[in-house]
Length: 499
Image (cartoon, rainbow, N blue to C red; front, side):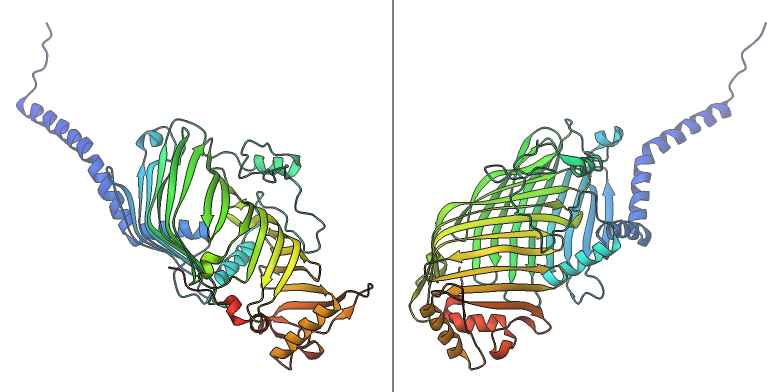
């Protein structure tokens, strides 16, 4: 008869010790993992790893003060700095962010998705000059190939009218993303290639996330033209992403252009639907103009974005800007449609066009009290990765007409030709006015085929001394800005500072 071996006292003690050890390991493993991750990310190696990832994505130096993580508080990144290139000449950081909090979704991680419930960005301060932005885009072009989402650069001599792809309302694109029609299918081989190269990274499902922005500001300025700057202050709001259709909004405390124009308390409602973050035909008043804004950001590789701005038929009244002074211009009817589209990860891919038409344009001469009237006018302007092209700008009146075309490239080249056509009496008046400003200036007109009209072509170019024009005697090049201000009168450009 077999007997079961008896478990000794020491064997029972050893078994209980092993059980306690494994229980302790299981219970303490989250704390050990938490401590290990915080130790890694708080080290120079951990922050350097994240810095390099950001640098590789943006192409700009990055510095991070600290990174911490907890199961209940998510990942907290403090003191994020996106630096200017060393040889850019801009000493200020391009972007400074006080704190970023990423609250990951454990459910999505368990299912293999890398998503978060909430992404908070607090105290983002963006400050970039046009010159640095131009340099960054030039470096990007040299360091990378053009993305498949990019569009072919528009050449200055293009015969395109800029109206291809517009429906009768002037807002629907034929291919790619449209601000107002995200369901439009891509057409053509190129468009199909774009779609094939850009599969959705975020499929439609029930998972929902939120982007929160608070205490943020953005400023775009020019080092060569100190008078120019555009600034958004007090930016905050919540944006929905992923999952079912939901709404959110972004609020802006003030939008300032230069030191004289300011608009307070702007609100932009957003709608998340089918992998698109949209603004749909939102009416807004900006600096006395009634606008309608539409935008769409698609969550696919490359992050394509589209923006549409419509200016419905209206009268321009600049009296609120000039307060008690008479505005220099008045327009009884003006309307405009503008579209911009491209990829956020490839600045060179952006293309766009703007078409504006107007009637009864009057320039009120604040220098001598006279008026110059134009019956009608239009302007067609295009944007590409190469620069801005004014294909056709014209204002037509019974006594005067002004025709213009020109371009400004991202490399700093700029040129334009302005043709002034006037009656002989008006041509003589223009010549006397210009020559009265300085004996160095000359505005001699030449006769057209018809005897009742004379013309003068004025060439404008970007040169080493800045923007110049051939308005001097015998074609001498003269500073453009100073001459225009002197000829038209300083009071024309002197607008009061708005509160």
